[in-house]
Length: 278
Image 1 (cartoon, rainbow, N blue to C red):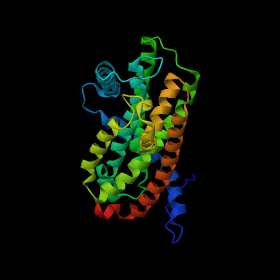
Image 2: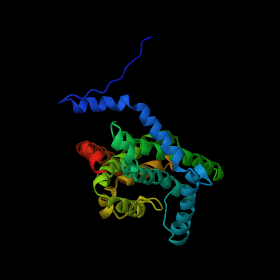
Image 3: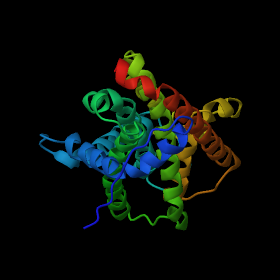
Image 4: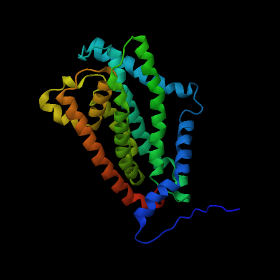
């Protein structure tokens, strides 16, 4: 009986080529780590995966009360304000969760990294996949809200996967860069929660991007999450695709691709030292 043998060949001068091949060879490990992260996330919790729905729901209620009832911020949409907030909460919750899990992934898998060879890129990628599962569960609540408010989504909701992919790309890019820094500088485990908390208020989650003065709009759009949230709302709630929204989407795409290139280069440059300093 013939058996297929898999060998890892280390050749001088062909590191990059063999590395990307190894990503495919270790695809089963990627699946195992992703599934493990999903199962461990809510292990020994009373509500389990219900937290995936409960967290964005509670934030939606709080933001609706604070920004709509108290602050009276305009949404400029023909949809319930709660739906407006939840359409912004979906990408933000996925982004913040993926960024946090991804940036801490290497430190959380110290034993695995120091004992076994595999492309380390698999670890942060699997952490983002676990957050993506949370997003899919939260997406169910969106359709429940559609029924509750008797709201018919527009045809462009079919384009939602494009902005989901952009959200995945952005969180993975930033998380990949931060996780490499977190291995060497453990201060980042305190900095990252602050970044996430600060990002919530400078991102149009509870308010519309249209209230930002035009002179500050470009600075506001440098936040790559802005274009993603605007894109999600346009897909879910409809409305006019203004030049400001088109600009924020374009900036988000450009920044995400740029950050991905920078993050991969930095990660690959420092990857060989992870096992020694982690």
